[in-house]
Image (cartoon, rainbow, N blue to C red; front, side, top):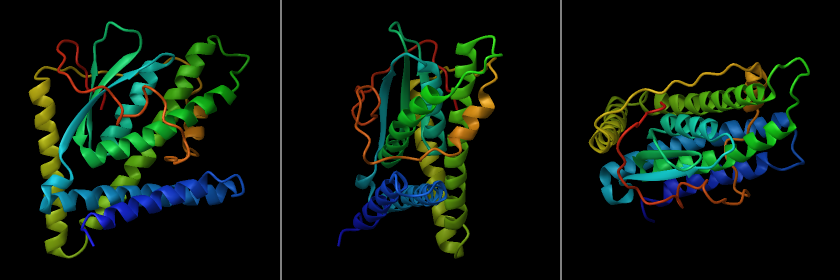
Length: 260
């Protein structure tokens, strides 16, 4: 049996749990339990891949992708992508672009970009469906501002859930026997340094970007985001959404902004 078999079996369990969560026959409570467990296993998968790569570097190399995000709501989609990527130990740079929409350059180890791809592709579709079903209050002075705040609330809730799962997995992995816990902490720290150096080499000068909103739909979006499935195996890949199918990375200069 190859050493890579164990992480792959773990990811297969994640896909099966997500498929169960998406089944119309399960109750909301059951779906929440399935997705929570899936997020926990996906976090463990990320750590297992990191430890495997420490022994077999060829199994997981640093990588980067450029993703063009189309309108409508390109900036809000970019906020979701960058938040998920950051939670999953990647880094994003928001690039200036002459085309409509947003362009994001994501850096990370291959397995972490893979995890980001899985979650972003699923959550993006769920976010669109949720917004389509959300009713703008009659008293709202701006329907667009309300919807934008709803999207940001949704994204914030999902990102927080993913961060919590990642933190829990790291806590477990670094809280065992002294030797194993120290090794895990060192491996994860080293990977973070590698990715940070990649970003700094590609973009020596960046500036922080702040996301603000004026609408009043944030709370409704946040509550919907707390119920979102964290992934999905039956969702079709759509153009401009999959990181795996994104354009090859090319260095850009000027106006680069890390969102997280």
